[in-house]
Length: 247
Ligand code: PGA
Image: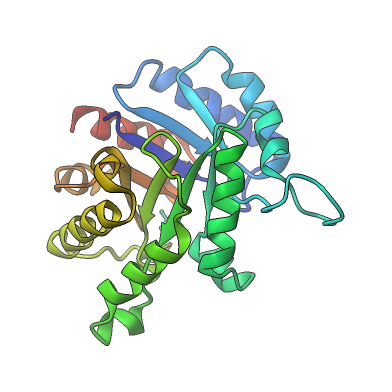
């Protein structure tokens, strides 16, 4: 299995930020893991053009479940693929919160993404109050079951475990907490899609930084990271890619 270092730029970056993607390619021209940046949709085509022939892959941050139609402001999976995307993040907690996305909608989007030849990065994670209530595994199990479409394989599905309380906060779960959830995800995914689950990449996300990446990547069933804030600057993301390459 080739591990995956994925950067999520969220709603950050104008054309000037393409220089950071260029600097990342220069810093990590040949990583021993897959290296992905997911810029805002306005930068997809330009970044994909810049990354052509390099190790950097480009992803989107959302897609519509339909291939085309009367959906003002939305983007379909075939459009993202046409712009040069190979991956799309789906069901990020910010979209679940800001746009009320449900597990069923995430599953429909993931199915559309896979049909368009994209790798769906399906995000899930508990809130702080859910963890405090001891509901973490129940919440994550339900999100997994509801958000992963039938027909998913190791080639078209990545799962990102992102505790909501760890995103953008500088707080991370303990190593034991991450390891517990990732082992649980591997087992439940096996129930859902069978032996194929063994090689589905399971990413951890939430305040991953150069300083904590290596210890997180050493944990069992952690096959990479989904990185927000620390993916915006090549000087931060390149060492995270290096740590995953060395893991
Ligand atoms: P963060 O975001 O690395 O800034 O915590 C992670 C994410 O939301 O994917």
